[in-house]
Image (cartoon, rainbow over all chains, first blue to last red; front, side):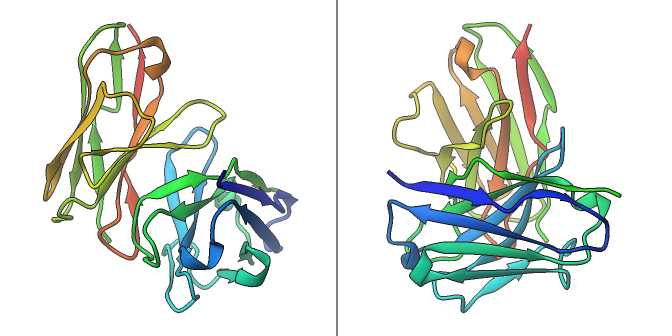
Length: 122
Length: 107
């Protein structure tokens, strides 16, 4: 069974940093692109960042560009999101998601993890 | 970036109703569109990919159609389990984007 489990969320002050992790299992992790998507409380889905299977292609939403860094460790079947200079508007449930297409950064997302909550507040 | 819109934003319907949700892209995305269902407190669940391909295990009352800039998700006979929020997503570009969502609630 394909499984994605996020961790690392929590309460953090504005301007501070946080690193999210996503542990993957049940599939050959290094054959698939991965993405982060967030959802602010009561709001819709917002794509945050994506990384190709070999880390050769990376993209960010304009809202996080220059502050967030996505990375992956294929040996550890893990995806990461380093979040710096956090703002109140970054408060959200952060999901990691697997792209369904083999070795393509573009594609539909399936499955999704259950999310980890990041709250930015003083 | 490609912008996605959905209509309506909220839809009130009864069990057994035929329901249609529309998603529009700001530029052509061919058939690179997916539909997701999300229930409160849960992660989104894939329903449809490539605009009209039904994900394995998803009931056949769900169907998708369209190409280019206009797409629809249809539920042929609404069931109690279908009351949820539905999102479209384009993956034509390297920056995927989601529609704002359509909440289907009980009439």
